Length: 296
Image (tube, rainbow, N blue to C red; front, side, top):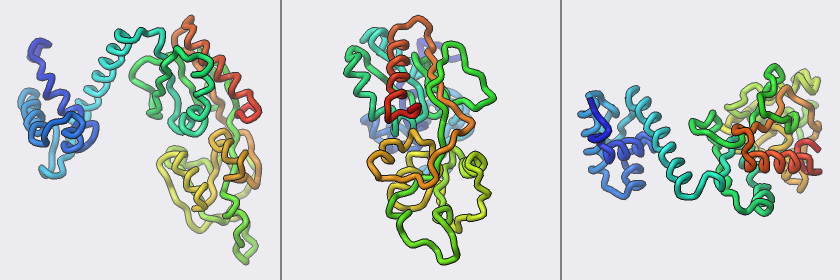
């Protein structure tokens, strides 16, 4: 049995980087070693474990089932070690960990985060934006909850989500088809993380979807869908808060306005009594209540 005193730390680091990147070349670049060094470390680790971690041709190896499980566990372990080092080096009172969806962070939170930093310059805000529950503990979590889920303990309502059809002004003003269609006949932009959003909007807006787009394009995340809309590739149904700035400056228009959906945003302080978490939650609630905020 492998004990802590003889853990192959270098091999573990090499394999974790290779598993995380998906390629040995990228792992070698990250760690500043050769491709062959990473390969030797992985082979040594496979011998120690007694199971293959990669399979397939040498120039295009893929993780085995055991490799995927082991890689995920190692990444979580190294993340925890990094967190522990930061806590010891800088002090936990200065680090503020916030978890939220990546598109919310990119499209709304990050453009406004400098206001919080100006008010609380001694906090080092770190965002976890994996679109999954972070494996490490955080101070504040911004949740998106459906109507059938209750507000958790230490949670406060931020706003109810609004959905609307958005498009670039150039696309809206371009000539439509001659068969009586409207903007809904334009190519539809869809998002893989929310595949039924068009049906949701149709139900809430009272649209029967009789005008169906002839083509559609699907993107992995909302920020990609919004970029496609900004570039005139089609029309999309998106939450209003994600495009509030673009609507305000005229880069996007919402011909049908917005309707409330079944979802609401909630801020939850994970560590009760922590002043830094309360400071961020209070600032977030105030920012959202601003004229350009989702809860206008």
